[in-house]
Amino acid sequence: MKQTLFSLLAFVLLVGCAASTTQGLVDDQNWYGLGEQDGQRGLPQRSLKDLQTLAGQSSVTVNANYLDYEKGYIHGIDDYCDPAHAYQLGLDGNPYMGVCESRPGSQRFRMEWQRGHNDSQSQSNSLFY
Image (cartoon, rainbow, N blue to C red; front, side, top):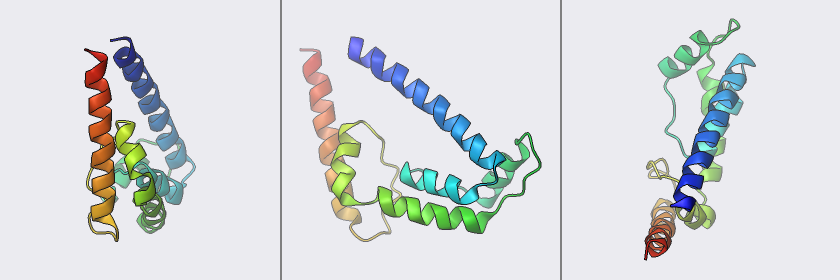
């Protein structure tokens, strides 16, 4: 119970930091950085409409640059989809949103992530017994 509460608190803090970082990147018009960040987190690629919405929410006048975002996303997703760290992502409880499916090594990535996820679930279940 204590670990679950701690995990929930850590998640809330992480989401809050991610939101402020995202808006900071938008305000700085760092579309490459935003794409890279999304890719490294294993998030689905944003659409041009999504970027325009973020730009519209900025406190400064910004224009969405999809090409820069896409270049950054490709770089970030290359890092994320490395099967060598997929097990740890699953073990840490990070969700996998299928973003590596069209990439080389996707089957190995998914299998390693699933193995880590299963081990994480086993560890969580053993805390209650």
